[in-house]
Length: 611
Image (tube, rainbow, N blue to C red; front, side, top):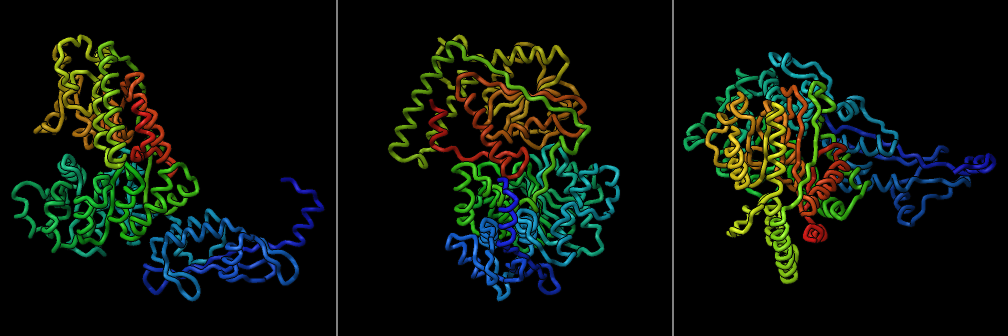
């Protein structure tokens, strides 16, 4: 809008803006609470009480007449944003304002100071605490000083800052950037501090497949730490000696069985690795880890959200219970509205609320010495036999789903839905996975032929490949083909007894191909001997595929990593690709990066998949 000079002069002459100003007052000598007050005043010095402001808003007005005859203008949108903050923060009402817990300080500053641009009067120490996420303080990294990269040192400083302020946090670096190493450096610094109370060990809870990876990393980078792997049938014999160790390692599978054994003890810090294992707040995993007494809590995960933002609530309920409010309220305020579609204002508010306690760096931003990762989708066609069977399976599955939904409703029919989708995905891979028992099928898989062509090029070019599938029966068929062509291979799935030996053999160059079950080998492996990754079948969650690719594309890799995704045209697989892109956009709106948010499938999405 362009104003003529006379009109602009007239407006400025007869209008005064109501300018808010905020005051922060820390409570007492501690740093667990602070008081917050806001004043509304015009340039002429006329004040408005909170009640006056609320009366204006409730009346749908953004102006009021002043005593001097001028009009006062109010930014009602900004005041409503403050009200939304107060609903989230749930402060105690005070005579002069509000009393809030310290963990809300950064959320308040992000809202009133940065988003709304209001004047904030606060002690310099308070402002420093909420603004300095990097915590650029001098730390003695000891023997790790020459090992840690600059961004990893920043990560350790950030963890140190959280600890000093009594906050929990999520180290959400992209896969391959050394979250385990940063956590170990944090443990070493805390254990060497003169101010820390002795006798309280750190506890790490991680997937079973990563327990011994943590042990190996600790032995390599922090050999002075006294480490106990709390696993095996005789593990309870060590319970009374917890205080003799610096670091105790256990798994999610065991923590829920051993919850009672941990109750008498207090730990310095509980660290959850791959914390998506507690995304279901009602699961035994979540309840077990939340019952452990400790002074500090940290989370390591590259995927803070997998199914919905309620996953994030469960993680924060472990980190800082109560910070995101009650699960029911969070679901009503965030999960359901965001599930109905894009809401930039709501996504921005959630981001401001959680961002101070999440540190995420991407490889392209911090690991400049990593080679590029090239991603390519390779399409194939169904064979004639496949197309005929696929159409039959599609029609039968659609009829079963419609009948189940019509009878019991969509919510109670999810198992029928996923069984139908599972059979379609199996049919895209190879008809033999469907176990139809017919000898008339001569061409069971167009994708297997594409794989053969791709593999020939890979082997002839001197490359080495990781091949992922979610179906172990598909790995059987791939192994059969490799053996028939006299190509050496290694294999890792849920039945593998000695994972370390299989990984060692591949890393030493015994075979050019490594067949891996996506579930058993998608995380916790360092396979930089490979420079090619093949995803034989697509997974719903793009983050799971990204993590699998990062088995090869990680620190230590010196070559360009190429990732191939094999997709069968005109099938449910092609529709999964579009669904993955939709989920990527949803997470990017909240975190501002390439995380992964796989929302629960809606009935409309299921219908599209079954067309």
